[in-house]
Amino acid sequence: MWQRFFLSQVTVFTALTLMLATVQYTSLTARTRQECGNRALMLSRTVANTPTVRTYFERPDVPLPIDPLLRRMQADIGADFLVVGGPLGMRYAHPFPPALAQRISTGGGLDDVLTDGDPVEVGVQQFRDFIWGKAEVRGAAGDVIGLVSTGFLLPTVQAGIARVMWGLLPWYGLGLLFALLSSLYLSGRLRRDLFDLEPDQISGLISQHHAVLTALQDGVLVLDGGRIILANARALAYLRVSEVSALPALPELWPELHGLLSGADGTSFQERPSEWQKQPVLLTCYPLPGGQRLVLFRGRAEAVRLAEELTQTRQYVELLRSQTHEFTNRLHTIAGLMQIGRPELALQVIQREASQAQQVSDSVGGVAPPRLAALLAGKIARARELGVHLQVDPASALADHWPEPVIDALLLITGNLIENAFDAVQEQSERRITVMIGEDAEGLQLEVRDCGPGVDAQHWQRPGFSTKGPGRGQGLDLIRQHLLGLEGHLDYLRSSGESVFIVSIPATEGEP
Image (cartoon, rainbow, N blue to C red):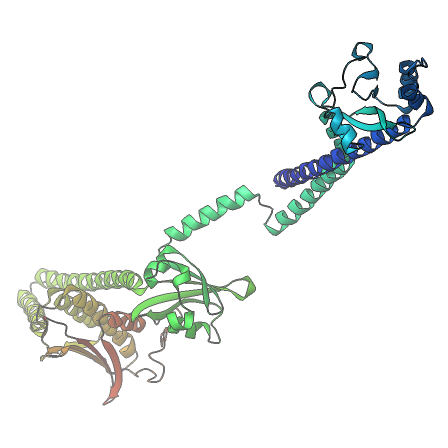
């Protein structure tokens, strides 16, 4: 991580350094030209006012070795060029002897020089790296009798850049050291805050977490107060929105969930039944740092379906076991009677069993759906084994036109209510259970009566309520949740010393 921080800081610092170097180079170049130009102009004026140069122009009849004199002056003042020219621009003194007696070629024309006064010019063509300061030589009468041009070689671009970089190099080194130390510190601090993970590892984890959230069959919500700040694809699909930003506040979106979270135990709970737009759901809540909460939810239909399968499987196993025991005993009895030579008694046993079977068949004869009739017949056999008198009211009648979801729900509801009744009468001296099933234009009704002690009328509808001890109490809850999807309801009352559970399922279009 620190390498990335260091590289980014070095990149930024280098860019800033280059910008600063460019500005400084431009400023240095302008300042150098100004200084060299002023110096060249000052030296030209000084040379132009020396008596020797003025005498040379005023007394042409007096021979003066002007060129050697000017070469010594050039060496003394440190100029790169020192040229003296006449009024017509002819060179009288020049560092290169072949250029003597030729016209001055640097800068503008001589007329411009003499007209505009003392100019400072940058050389052209082969003299483009020079700067010149030109001053006129005036005679005793004040007229221009010649000119002096002093030139200096300007620093090259490479020399200017080198000068700037040498000036900035110590600061650049300090900047690199600061970038390195700050990168090490920041990366260490961030690694501690990010569980010692590198950025690419964090990116991988985020991708993995997104894939996991997408693959989850449960809806996932992260709540911050009343706001939903994160939702996986399953939750968005269940809530019928396309993105989290489109979700309203929780109290408006899901009042039932908001009510649960606002309760005394709303910080954390497991598998709490609730509703979403009249659809049963199971809610689980976990606290998160910073006061946030993680809520998992899934449709209760899947849980109910699994519970139904388990309940029906358990019921079928119990029915088969009870019938196996019962018929094994009957077969052993018949075989024993035949062995001891009492066939008439064996015949009586057979006739009695046939009569009981016929009674069971007659009692469920009004129940047309075969699965429900078979369940009732099996429960009667199970009751006989438990010593419980279970009867189906002779007035029971149910046609075989109800859709499969209703029959499936009725199987679960009937089986659970009868099993609860078995438990309720187990400790009673009189063990009697009555089941009645009927239908009319409004729908179907199921009634299960038992002579047990009953349940608490004020708390029996509370989720998880049970009189059977820990780990129980899911039967009534499953019944209520299943009825919720069918718009049915479950009622309980005490009548003539009996507990009565009444189930009502309304008819839909096409049903009686």
